[in-house]
Length: 170
Ligand code: NI
Image (cartoon, rainbow, N blue to C red; front, side, top):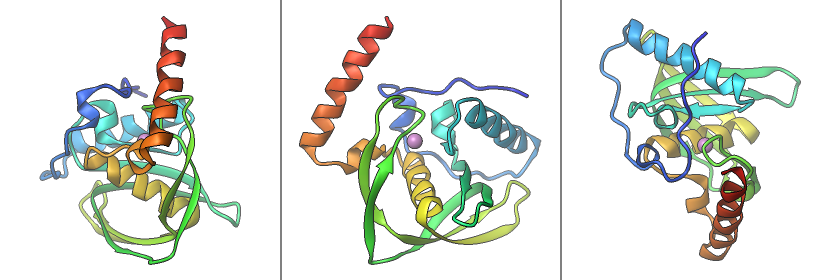
């Protein structure tokens, strides 16, 4: 088990659009394994490459579904190929902005095409929390954070809270 350091808000790594993965090799599979370890250690439900300082289009998610099962995915070069017109607001947080949560409006359903870490083609039809987590993580690959999807006022309030919280930790 290998943990990687999680980049926090303010890190440039979070803002750099990530590059596509070209080789499906052991290094990629090690990255994916480390990302799962890091996500579980931090008790998150999703993590993207840039959050561990790796500017590659890789994400992992582990989300409970409504039937009590789990949706565990490692996606390489994921693309959202379809988004529902219907959207909904629900609470989100991010391991790179700990302690901050807010309701974000997103499409309810998405279809995502990607490769597995072994290079196989995948297609996932997702709704609910999985759809939300996938959209959040794909945003990370483009340098976008969930706070970017809020109104300027909401964002300002949260950033104030974030700064206060950070000062306390020093
Ligand atoms: Ni996040």
